[in-house]
Image (cartoon, rainbow, N blue to C red; front, side):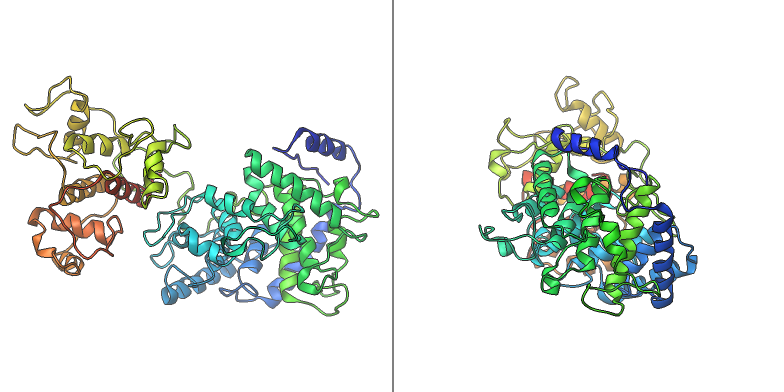
Amino acid sequence: MKKLAKKGLSAAVAILLALSLATPAIGLDNTAIDSAVDSVAAFMLRTVENPQVDSVGGEWAVIGLARSGYSVPDSYYENYYLTVEQYVREHGPILHDRKYTDNSRVILGLTAAGYDPRSVAGHDLTIALGDFERTIWQGINGPIFALIALDSYDYPIPVNPDAKTQATRDLYIAEILRRQTPDGGWNLTAGSGGSAVGSNEIGDADLTGMALQALAKYQSKPDVQNATELALTFLSGIQDSMGGYGSSFSGGSSAVESAVQVLVALCELGIPIDDPRFVKNGNTLVDNVLSYKNADGSYRHSSTISGNNQMSTEQVLYALVAVQRASESKNSLYRMSDTVRRGEFRPADAIGLSGKHDDVNRVPVTLQGKTFTDVRNHANQAAIEALAERGIITGKTENSFDPNATMTRAEFATIVTRALGLPVRQGSTFMDVQANAWFANAINTAYYYEIVTGTSATTFNPNGTITRQEAAVMIARAAKLTGLNTARTDAEIRDTLAAFGDYRTVASWAQESMAFCYSEGILDDAEFDIQPGIAIRRCEVAEMLHRMLSKALLL
């Protein structure tokens, strides 16, 4: 069996891995692995003929089959997609109001099957994972599977306008690390509800394996690397003489699911299956998993329970597929950029929407971790920091953003042209904008691309304060350049704005733009009044731009 190079761990771990690479494979046979995959895949096709939106008889069967080399008709995946599509029509983009892992699981299933989870019955199924608090409410499974799902195709985390805390990958990583138990493992309850992890908490193999799967991509981060080393030591220490693991879900007796999760973790981390730390009495994890096999290709749950178990069998399928893919030097189970596309699928690295202006570009991060002392715990912190990291918006000083300050027309023109990555158009069109003014090129650029107009044919009023309705109009014009559909019918405008107490005060020239911003979630429709004529604050501009760029796939 081909060995996998382990990257990103400490020198000591790297040396141990190097030694393991020189050791003949123990208990591993490529032909046996291929045969085992074919056997369990055939069983899966017989028993899960029409996969549903479900944790058993659903996504895990689809993932295992799609990531294997087993021959499966395209109609199998097409029917699954149609089932998901109908489910989304009935439930909306949040598939379960308490278990956001449902969204994560379906994202993985669709991605493996070759369909884009960001466009299902008109909904983006990744939107749920933009809500940090609701995702982690379920427990440690929430952040684990959110990361696994999002990273399966490097999906950007979308802005979730309903989120109390906008999620980021760093927040999910930190939540997983926070809940590591003192022995180096993870369990289902340690640190739940934001509480501290108790000194007597004990990890279990299942959750530890899952956590490592989620953290596998982030080994360049020192804290993740340290947590991983502790977890690997823990898992090696509790592995039994048969190469498997006891499970808290089976009263401590050996269970195939526990071995499965550790096996997948090793494959995601790139650790050889015959690494000496994970071979006991000559038994590897693969040997242990295969010991649960039944004659019909199914698998038992426990060494003490006979008969097949559908959940166990589905987990074994994708674990053996993970090993098979490793042996063939393919992408790992959860790195799905190589999956066969069966529907229209926007590439993960696609820059913007198909209808965007050619001059609009994604602005890269150049100031990683940039923040300001006065935005900590601010409602718009995530948006401000995301724009600041890209140099789109700056502080009043190096460390102060002044979120509640107003914004001038010149400042807004500067920020919006940076946000779209537009090429600079030098010069000045207006008499009150001197060619050598710091904002002259930005105003000229914004005017050239029809994002802004003057207050007259010859004046711009660069130092004038921008109002909420003026900002909405300029954001809508910018959004049109990104390919977003900003047009609204009279009925749509009326229906959207009539929900607000002061909708009649919106200027006629701003109504369509206001309706666009509210209907797309760029402005928060939870507010009672629009207040179109008041000066907009810097924090509000940052939030509007961040939401617009996210919808335009430019973050």
